[in-house]
Image (tube, rainbow, N blue to C red; front, side, top):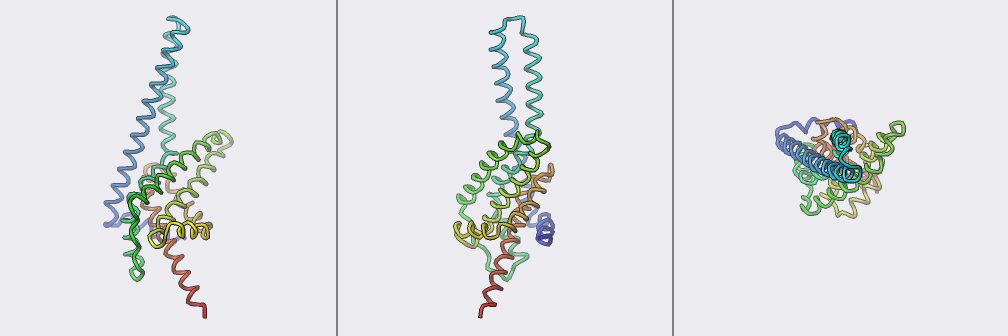
Length: 243
């Protein structure tokens, strides 16, 4: 597994993947910023609406305290959104990864597995659908994990484990679907759940690093291509041993 991680990290900065790396990081940053701005505008609007309602209910004498309270709520919301962007990254990664899976996988296969049959590109609709499903599921899981942040850091553990499972699952299945139908890819993932989760832990550690996390789609896909290809080689060896 360590060898696969090292190879994935090294290849991320190779000339063929450098352009994809910049695109993935730029798109990820754009999505996070847009989501943050939209959410901040929504919260600011709700705070202003609440201030207007409270002023009508309490009278004009409450105007100044309510303005101050509204300002505090807006600033707090802004800080919360900045922190929350860290939690959004796995969902953003799942979505962005769906646009680059085949380009990354093909390059990894070409460089490290030239003797193997190259995989078949996924239908764009299938790749995007898988990315959207995991992104939505990730947001739901992280919303559930937020309350645990106030229980001795348990939320961070829940966040890490959920990220390892969700992203490991998604990117392994995307790598496997290049060689087999979706149902078989999901079955293989369940059969290799220990290896997939271990690889997912490396992805979770990567996505937890600010700024660097924007490159997660490339790292995750490259890593899971190695994991899947080695499972194929292992299966071939088992078949060869059968008399």
